Image 1 (tube, helix red, strand yellow):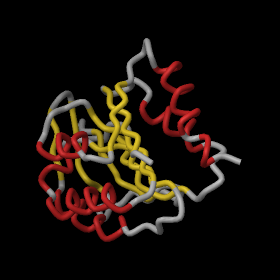
Image 2: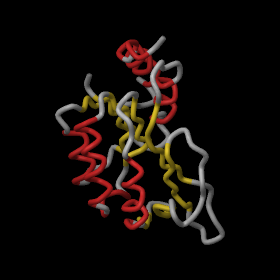
Image 3: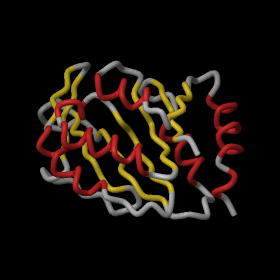
Image 4: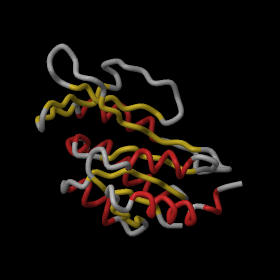
Length: 170
């Protein structure tokens, strides 16, 4: 099976679509989620990375960056540390929500992600619609099929992808 990449801009529904796709799966779900939190006292929004389905921790250990009005700062060391946590069993679906541009300065992390693309049976990823060498490599991966999402097509795309993933449902 080809990997499903949901490509789109911020707020268009990539994560919501992933939640709909994994709801009702009859196989385990593993992966990671990056989440931008509310603005802090410094005016920046912290961005954290977590393992999918596990309790979220908010510490410097998993703080991967900060952003504010188009200005972002990545913490490559945090991505490097998290790369070791990308070793998932291959008896289910791997979710990567979301892959963006902050990862670009962490070759350890980006190489680990690309290995997942090579080895996982099914991977579902939300991918930013920016162009970076890492994101371009993800979208060009031979096992990846990119599905562009926008406000006009997201309902139809959800229905299409639910049909494509029916073999993983009860």
